[in-house]
Image (cartoon, rainbow, N blue to C red; front, side, top):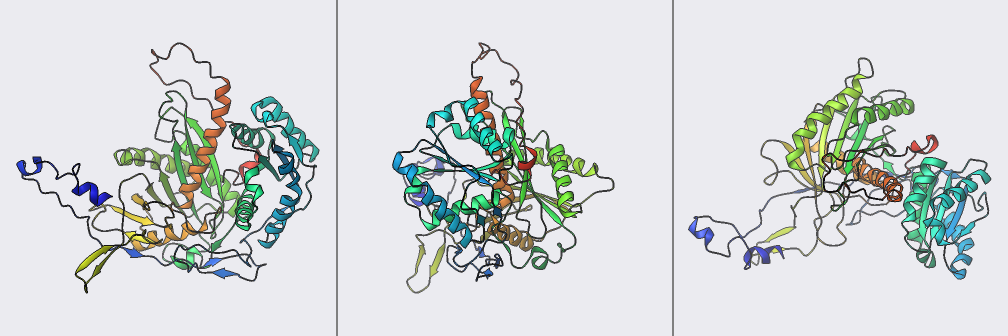
Length: 499
C-alpha cells in the first residue's frame, strides 16, 4: 500500500511541481541493516516440571504447559459477585469456579475451591446505582471479616459501572477485583482460564516470570546483585479530543524488587487539563523510593526512567523539568545522588520496517509478506545523527503492520552502550505479568499507561455525576480546578491492582 501511494496519483512525485523546483524524491524505501536480538532464557516456578524455558517459537510465545508461574500466591479468602446473566449462565458458575481453581493449581497458584461468602447474584441495574453498588461491596467485605484478597465480578456485558466498581473496591473498601464476562464463561478454554489466572496472580502479589540469567549477570559492567536498580515508568493520559475541561491523569510506576524487577507499584495524580509535564513528579518519585527502601532495605544505586507519551517537540522541556523533579526527589534523602538515565518511549510515529531480501539468483529483490520478527533493532540510517536512539520491535505483530517502538535516550548518567540498553529493554519486555509473550512496550512504560488509565476511570464516573455544565463555557479563560483522584487504600496500593 505504501509503495502504491508513493507511486500513485497522490504521491510526492505525481505532479510537475517537483520538476519545476528541481526536486528529486526517491520512490524507494530506505534500505538499512537491522539486527535480531536473541530471546532471554526465562525462569519459572519451582513446583512445575519445567523450571526454565527459552522462547524458541518464531513469535517468541512460550507455553505454561507443565510449568508453574515464577511466584504463585495463595488466595484463601475470595468472593464472587454476578451482575445480570441468564438462569443458565448463572448455573454454570460452580463449574467455572472449579475449573478456574484447577487451572490455577496447574500454574502453581492456590485458589480455594470455596468462596468465603456464598456467591452474590445482583441484577445489572445495581451497576447504575453508585450508592447501592458501594453498600453491596461493603457488605461482602464485612461478611469476609474485612479481610478479602480478591473479588471476582462477572457481568453479562461491558458496562460503564465497571469504573465505579473499580473505584469503590480499590479506594473506599480496599480489595482487588477481577472482572470477566458471561459470554466468555460459556466456552471455557484453557487459554482463557490461564490468562485470567495470570492477571489474578499479579493483582494479589505474585509474579508470572523472571529472567533466568539475572540482569547483573547479563550486564555486569553496570549492574550488581548487591546494588539494586529501580526502573520507573511514567505516562500522562489526556481526556478525549472533544472534552475541554477534564483533568489529565499522570501515573508513575516503579519496580520494587531486585534483581527480578517484575513487581511495580504505582502512584497516580490528576493535573491541569492537557498538561504534558507531570506536575507532582518529585513527590511521586519520593514515595516510590521510600517504598523501594522498605522492600529492598536499600535505596536504588541507579535510576532508569522511561517516559511515555512525549512528542519530539516537547523532549527538552520535559527533560529539563522532569529530570530536575527526579533529582529533587533523591535530594530528600540525605547524601543520595544516584546516576539517572532518562529515556522517552514512543509508539506514535510513522516509521514502519519491512523485511527485505536481496535474491542474487533472480536479480529480484523481494519484500516478505510478513512482519519483522521480535527482537528487531535498528539504530542506524533512520535514527538521529548524533543522539542516542533506536527502534526496537519486541513483539510479534499478529494483525496489521508491526509498529516498532522508538526509544530515545535524552540523559544518561549510567553511560549505557547501545548494546547494553537494547538488550536490557528487550529482556524486560519478556517479564510483563499479563501474558506469556514479549510485549511491544517496555513494561515500566506499559504499567504506567495502565495505571494512568485506571486513574482516568476513577475520575470519569465520579465527575459524570456532577455533569451539570455551567453557562461559562464560552467565556472561560483558565482551565477549571482539577478534581483530585481518590487514593487507593493502604492494603491495595502496594499491589499491581491496575494490571
